Image 1 (cartoon, each protein chain N blue to C red):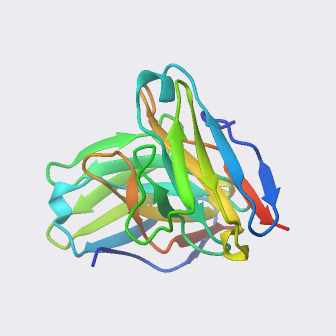
Image 2 (tube, rainbow over the protein chains, first blue to last red):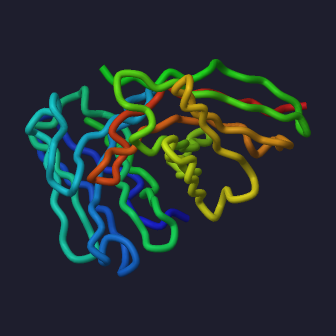
Image 3 (cartoon, one colour):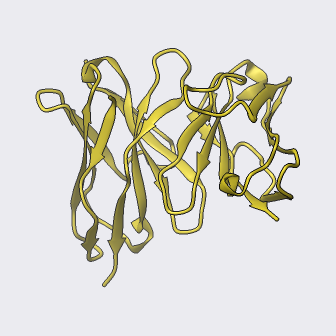
Length: 110
Length: 119
């Protein structure tokens, strides 16, 4: 049972927009800690996709965007492409555990 | 260019010990936390812990405290994850991660080390 809650799977057709939610509580996201997102392509190591809620590292397409509200965060992907098919994980900090991850969301491009 | 290069896959028997490594390059090794993340087959990511090589300050997830030991040799820019007594349930992919200074994320990941524990 992960500390941060994500939907197990989402799907969308090429060109569509999908969102992935990440829900925490008052000990992590709600305590003001930033949320980060990682993309894990099949058979590869995870890669940082969004950091500090809304920021993209160099090289990440602007089709990927992040947002944060009180105790949750979201990753949005617009103009969905086949190469976006991957697992996505959110991560934050927690006052007791230091680092917490979401359970991961499998994105299927139909 | 920042790189984290991990040691190769391991196959061990239950009860054996193991130490895997992660060599950092392209950045000042002593200035950043470096840690480990576990991923069991078909499962999600779990934070194990990290170490600050500059002063060897080490933090563990409560789930892994006492089960593994994280260390670092700053003279060769290398971090380690070790087990004293392996169990079948330790079978997993283990990723080395570098923590960013400000944002508390993991901005660079190693390629992963697959550890298989089987009799």
